[in-house]
Image (cartoon, rainbow, N blue to C red; front, side, top):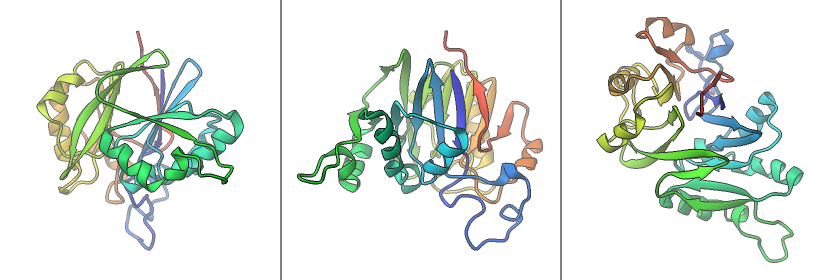
Length: 254
C-alpha cells in the first residue's frame, strides 16, 4: 500500500495570502503547502482522504487518473471544498464514487453540495458520489478501514486507520477508546498545527505528548501553518518529522 501526502498545510495554505513572514517567504519548496489531504493506493485502486480546496492542483501534480473512493474526516471547508473537482474523474470513467463519513459530515455535504449527490430534473447532471455513513470498521478494496473518533475543538472528526497506517488530521484530543484503535502502527500522520497552543488543533508539543504512548515507528506531523518551517524538524524527537506535499511511503498490508 502506497500513501501520498497530497497536502500538508492548514486551512489558509502556505504561503498565506498577504503574508510575508519567514514561513511564507521561504524558498524551501517543502514549505509550500496545499490544504491537507491524502491518497492511499492499493492494488490499482485510489482512495482519497478528504477533497481539499486544492484537489485539482494536487491531482495534476501527482498524476492521479482516477479516484475510486473518498473518506471524509469532517466537513470543514478546507477538507471538502474541492469536491467539485471530482467531476473530472467521473467524466472519464463514468462511475459513481462511493464516499464515506459520519452522519454529521454527510448531512452537511448533502445540504451544501446537493448537485453532487442527486440529479436535478432536466439538468442533465448525474450523481457523482454515493454517500455511505460510517458507524464502524468496513472493507474497501481488500483493505479494512477503521474509523477513529477524534475531538476537534467543540466538534467531532474522524481519523482513519488502514492496516499499520493511521491518519489523524484536525484534532486536539484522541479519546481513550480511540487510542486503543491505534496500537502497533508503522506510520502515524497526525495534526501538529504550530508551535503555540490552539483551541481546535494539536500544537506540536501536544501532538508529540499525545502520540508517544502509541509508539509508532514513524510519526509525521501535518496540517502545518506558516509558523512552521520544514527545516525546523531537526529539533523534533527521534521518530518525529514534519510532512511536506508529495511525501510518499509504503505500508505493509499483510
